[in-house]
Length: 269
Ligand code: IPD
Image (cartoon, rainbow, N blue to C red; front, side, top):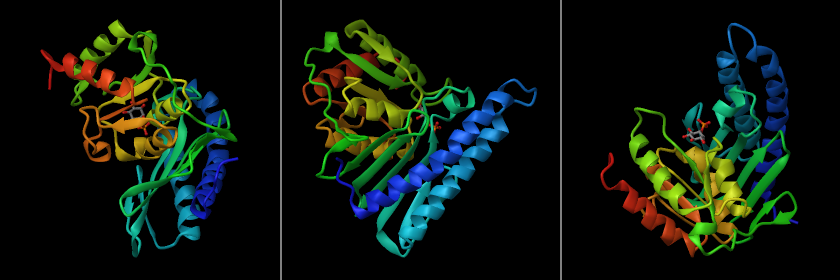
């Protein structure tokens, strides 16, 4: 059974409650998908409503903590040592298209360190949790990153910034280099679940450029607590600030990093 600190317990309950609303919204989408208006506005409303539920639940249980959400920005609390980092729907494009690969992602930072994490896919009812020093779990199962050591046997997840966004060309060059060297690459569309997939040993690694902190904060702790290594995509420690991330086991991490560095030559920086 996972160790749930009191704060992590609150985060799990908040994610479950918000998840029930999201499941209803996801069901509604099927009707909107085929309407002329399309589901765009509906999805923005679902995103905002989900964040509102998370904010209400988390701030009721921990009134002093700061809250940083994708939709509403930062709401400072008097307790400057604790901050929730929240993505109400990570994988919005998947959600919009009726693809059941999206999550509610909630991390808790204590004095700038990731302390607790929840990544919840309400459709599959997969609840990933981690508490610093107490391991990572998928529902009741303890997670370990994959043990593969040889890059040619690996399956690597990634995401690619939209065309015109910084890092787009570079990411394509990196995809080319990684595809040439591994079993394959997956682009699933929800960074938090990609990281959870690394923690669960489903993917051997994950890298992406141009992410926001709320896409990856919870997933980073999941990977670390499952015994994996996380850095930014250039090997540095400041993923949340740079938006670039690389996660894998400690043998593969330097191998993937080398491939990414090699791929940069000749492409946009
Ligand atoms: C997105 C997802 C996606 C990644 C994008 C993110 P959002 O988050 O994590 O996998 O490739 O860069 O923006 O916008 O759905 O919360």
